[in-house]
Each structure stands twice: as structure tokens, then as C-alpha cells.
Image (cartoon, rainbow, N blue to C red; front, side, top):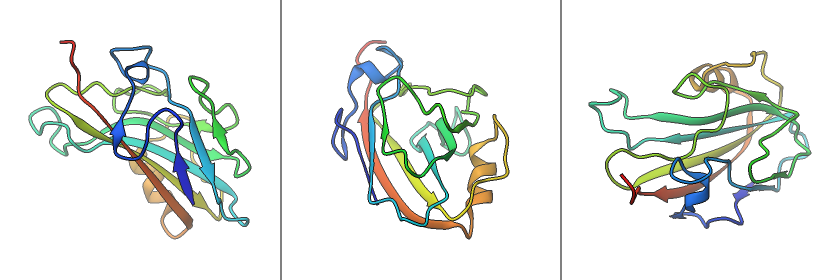
Length: 153
């Protein structure tokens, strides 16, 4: 499987438009080579570089999307995924939250999972609940990493 974006390359800089300093909208994403037998997709976007004094686990969940139909190959800029279920980000909101690092450059991991099932979870489920539910059901995995550092503070 492959997960790419026309907005930034793997390990490249995420454009300002997709951050808290810009329009705070989701970047466009492309899915390729999804297994034919996939029943659903999961997209998790997180930042593992959060200072420990802000979050003990050092993790911030920016976007949690699950039960994406496996025939979806594109998430358009700023559109999200209308046929999927949106989970809860770290702020407790069921939406995309763009990069907004408080201290330095952070890495943002866009993780795409192909599953052999749909998840029996509800709107607003947490990343932790989704990660637990997908265990034993992953058919494929792809990852795209973007970086961002605020210049306006």
C-alpha cells in the first residue's frame, strides 16, 4: 500500500495552509495498492514529538478517521471523508486539527491501515479504541511523514 500527498513529500515540510497558522484544513491524500480484500480503511494522524510537560505520553492525535470505504482512493484538500466515521482528536473534537507545535519542528505521522473488517465503534471513538479494535485485522499499512515548525509565535 502507498499513502502520498501532492502537497508534500515523505519526510518533507507540510505547507502552512494545512496547519494552525494557515487554513487548518486537511491536506490532499492519495491511497494506492489497497488490498482487494479490504473491507475498510483507517487513517490516523498523530504527532509523537509533544513535550512531556504538556502530555506525559508525548503524543498528540490530530485526525482519527475509520470505516473509510476501501474504494476511496483520494481525500481532497479540506474535504475530509464524508463516507467514514470521524473519531476524537486530542482536543476531544471530531475533526482534523492541523500541526501546531509549541516548541520546535515536529513530525506528523499519517498512517493508513487496510482492514479485513469494519470497526464496531462509534463517532467520536478515540485513537486508542481504534488501535485496539484493529488488532488482528490489518491487511496492509502505509505511512507518510510530514514535518512542521512554527515561524509565527
